[in-house]
Image (cartoon, rainbow, N blue to C red; front, top):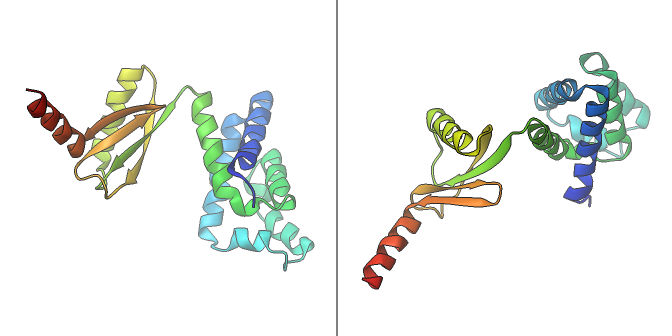
Length: 178
């Protein structure tokens, strides 16, 4: 089993190469392209990772996308395949996106809520927190049915708790202390 930390090293390495070669944007676009190809071809990663498929066949399969990506991105994908971590592509891709956003000075946050947020609410929340932090903040939304209402927002290690439970607890504390 491969640890999440060791998978991150692949993303770090690609970003470092991207910085030195001035290809950070190219690599992001290429990783998105490969992700699209992978999503359009379910089972592709399992096929490339399978010990039952001969190496020559895997090389041919992967070489079919060679024209769609930069030569260095293609080499990166080959390394993932040869080191038997290509089936973890999604995690490596997400790690690269995280590093990419950091590189561009963006912050990532998480919103936990019991209901899906509308696109408009998400955009407004991102605008409010971007203004608060003085740089772009993007959020990933997680559905948590344990939250009765409202939301919990994390930016970096800071929690902004707008949940109904917390509001009720504050009212209760105020009533008890008075």
